[in-house]
Length: 259
Length: 281
Image 1 (tube, each protein chain N blue to C red):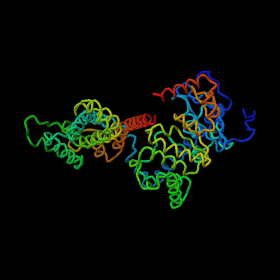
Image 2: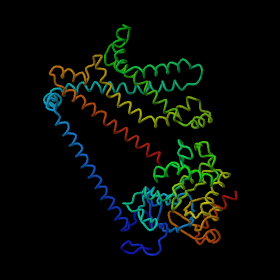
Image 3: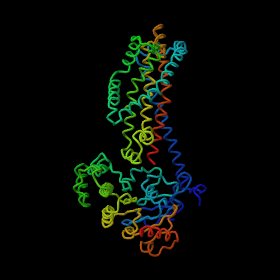
Image 4: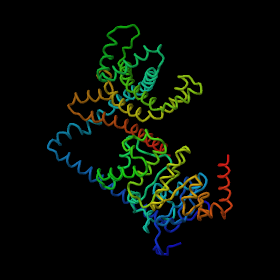
């Protein structure tokens, strides 16, 4: 623990610190005392079977779920404090879901500029300029005026990521962003994440794409039954996992790929 | 390390304490602001220049007590009309909605009739429908045509509200995604079976809140049948009001209608909240 009896935190401050976080649903714990810290510019990849608690952990960090014990700190300040305004916290991070959740009644440009304009108070002209820059950077310049239902799944998900980026978040949370896409479209979404890493974005992502995880992650965490069972570099986790459960999980994923 | 028996940390206990304190504080704020608001509203009303006269003619306890038994008795008629009309309206509305959904060319007359019916009865004011049916049907002198005012009132209300309810049903049916229909038809289910087993069960869930809204409205509109001579709550109140030039009996009738509609409104809210929760999961 990096905390003494008075609750003061010691030592260097990580960008995000998750401390002994528990989450219960209907009497069972889906997170059982998660400890994890994420440094600036670090890319952390959460792997594990469905129901292992990966998504719940991301939702807790975004305060979409309230933790049932433990605490989460962003830039050294506790965000799980009851007195903290969740909107204030969410303003500083972006989250992207498996189902893109674009607003169907708005154009791509309006989807992207909504939060900058209505939450961050950016003027329309500047917000749109920045949105167009982002769209151009990720190869979607010609889609600014399109409505989401005119886009492919991969394009929609890229717009969703750009929408989260438009508020200049400190931290990006990506929850299985490629799981709803067919393989041909996965590549373009992974490309955008690769670019984000090159730009120094701090990210926590959950994914079933083990190859991508191995390539992009600085740290890989294996969750099993709500416990962070093993964490290490991609090299270590994928070539020499210590825990039998990790080995078993990776083997099952590999077997599935071979079919 | 089972979740149920785990010991909460001091941090969590303190967090929960803080949450409770805040809940109590919000409760207190809500209570105080409600009292202040009601107090202010009451002050404005009771200080108005006409208040003493209004108090005499609308808030006379004696007149209230005198009229109450008869108004209550009349209100029972409203409840009866409502209870009989409601299932009839549901049935009529559903049939009309289904008729509008028939696509086969043979059924064109039926479909046209359904369209004409909804157009006409949604357009004509309910009060007019009641007057037309209430005085028009008996005047026909048809063999077997009802002459009883309550029956005529029920028929009129059913015709008027059936048109609204048909539209609610139709919106519900249309809101079920076409892929559901395609999936059912691809399994070999006929149009009717697709409707019955796949579309209507899903549509039903969505139309319940707007339907209940229409029924709250119907509960009040049962008072309109007083115009064709049914002695119900409003008519009873009118009789008392006219004999003593005191309007308190109207208040008694209003109170009864509110008492009936409020539980219905809360039930609607409850259903809406429940479907919201289900969708959230």
